[in-house]
Length: 115
Image (cartoon, rainbow, N blue to C red; front, side, top):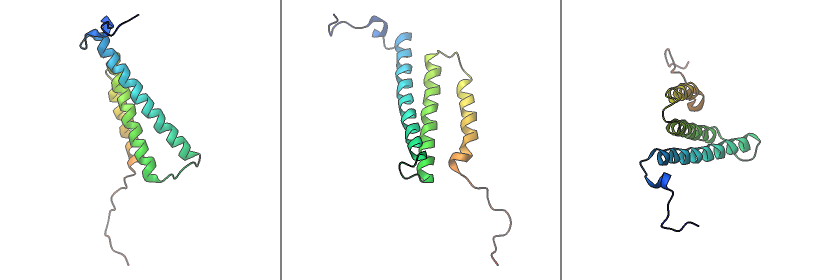
């Protein structure tokens, strides 16, 4: 049995590689949990269980992208830099989704005169 004075020697040094991987793994699990919660909320809205306003869907989509970004960063940290392009790919995908999430309208061109 372990007593309170005994610790895991691998994680004993908070700056050691195993402890750093554990920190990234723990962050990954937290981001994954929050992303799955947001997805389940969106699925419930899709099935008609709740008030689905455009603003609430946009807010959840932004939160989801934030959590997925956290997943990508923590995956990169856990992998020790094996996937340096992963964050860049996510940023490109996220940028491509931004017009859909933010629903920005193109500026009106021409005179603004009503007849």
